[in-house]
Image (tube, rainbow, N blue to C red; front, side, top):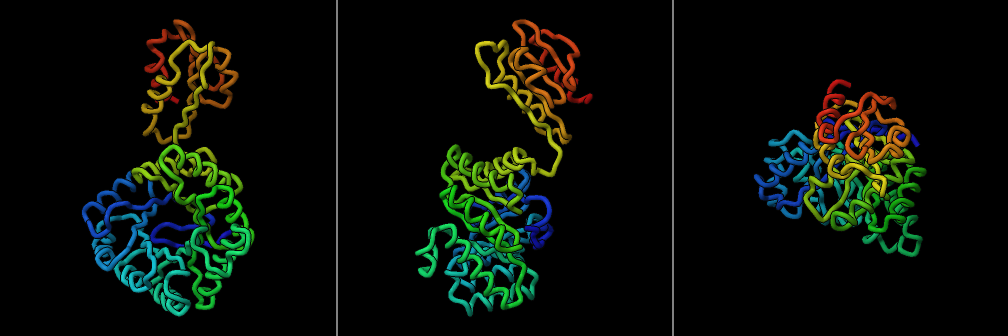
Length: 343
């Protein structure tokens, strides 16, 4: 279903490119540390940054934080509509709430009117672990969908439509099922994520499956990878997921490499890592293949713009699926660099 567009600062969510989000893990009232982390996230490619606002000190700090950074800031609110109002006054671009714990329908309506007047968007965040009793007897994916849409209906009665919906679960299958139901049920932009995904390796796998499956179906407008790690790694992983799903909207150099076997004649892993490092700042659509032998050479890497097929002492360089020259193995990296820069 085509999605409506919701403006969050200078980022449009819905019917456009998929935006990357992350969240600070500093104490929000530690203004210098929070600003420093936001800048690191933005440098890594983060387009929207969420900060938790657990208390009034944090809400007060938001004003200084917002004016000190150039990326749109989202205030994450739990249990207190007052903190949401203070964050709105601080100049945030979006508020994230779970309407079920904000203090009742009347406070949710008051907040909606307040945000509408200030042109601040709202993300309704539904979590599989905190559903209202009225929905708990249903299958979890259906319960999460219905809970989110119930909150949406409250806001729509206030003529508030700058809404983004998230419905996260730590269960990947439930998360996928819920978003597919929501995509069919409404035209609001969807924020994708597997919540509490875990430490780095586990979290990357869960997020790639959950977020990636939906993106490949054309579902999802903004994403956040949740890791128990440095949030910069969340941004890097999100970029990799978008690239793998062909949803990354900036030109980049992609490195492909073979998995290696007994035929391998060169150090594929080390060489691929060197090529990847060499190409990390190249902003043009380019695919470079590092293949360990002639069997996995030009034929197996069809579609690569250029690459190498490893030999025992010398290796073949190819461009656009055509052999161009043979070089000593010690010259593979500088030769690839020459062709990459010339391509």
